Image (cartoon, rainbow, N blue to C red; front, top):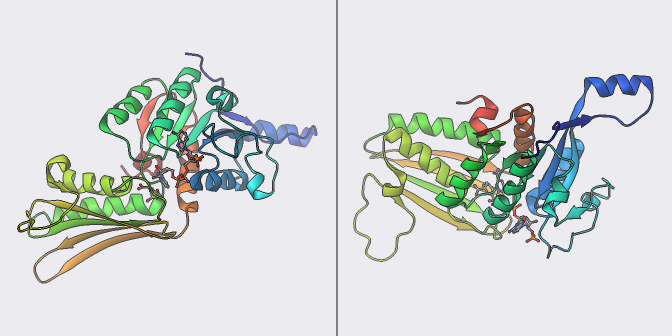
Length: 293
Ligand SMILES: NC(=O)C1=CN([C@@H]2O[C@H](COP(=O)(O)OP(=O)(O)OC[C@H]3O[C@@H](n4cnc5c(N)ncnc54)[C@H](OP(=O)(O)O)[C@@H]3O)[C@@H](O)[C@H]2O)C=CC1
Ligand SMILES: O=C(O)C1=N[C@H](C(=O)O)C[C@H](O)C1
């Protein structure tokens, strides 16, 4: 495995002595973005540009993307000097970390090259099968990875609230996870909803695979009290809402997170980039990044 020398690059390019001193003090994180012309790709490129400590050094998309060959920041009316490329190896050549919000098969293809080049990864993609997740885990033996179905601070704090609520409402409360997303989302339930279900099941000592109910239709019979139900709503441009309902007798509790902008996911991803600096291997999540474990 050819390890990348460093994940950072000098911040400035000016030749003055003051700039040189500044360069020594501040090293920028060299970040490549996969899915560069997607909804999250655009948001990430904008966040990297606005950040003081990250620099876009690679941009990947699929060969069929009309963005291939264009400047990755052209949609901002800015020239980053980084073209969108379908060549994974070339797209990662100058980067210390890849942020990937694509599709599971794309993420795994990118990860194989990251592993080969010693490039760390922040994975936001959702919809992985257990087998695909195992491949991510195997990659983390060689490179450092942050993987989370939701990078927002708010959702990760919500997961902590759910841990506490599930423990306290262990019996007598029916648990339902309801998620609402835009019409373009391709996976259901959302990765966040599944993670909420996992956190709750773990707090209750249940196996989510045995207790998850993903659909109801026809004569379903009465509700199994140990079920954890999931409902998915798709429509319009809704960024992402998640509610967990604990329905008891005579009362109900709803814990809700609503995202109004994808910027929250992008900012969380940059926090993950900073967390990975100096780490050589291991699989981490946003609890690790945010100190919530
Ligand atoms: N963890 C988190 O905080 C968040 C996670 N997500 C997840 O991120 C992923 C992307 O979401 P979003 O940006 O809305 O989706 P988009 O469809 O807008 O963007 C996906 C990007 O990946 C590209 N792509 C599609 N298939 C492949 C492939 N096989 N290999 C490589 N690239 C591919 C697309 O190219 P093209 O458009 O040309 O098809 C596009 O550029 C989803 O899994 C979503 O659930 C989203 C938001 C937050
Ligand atoms: O596809 C999306 O948009 C989102 N996907 C993530 C998920 O599946 O949980 C995170 C967020 O809800 C937005």
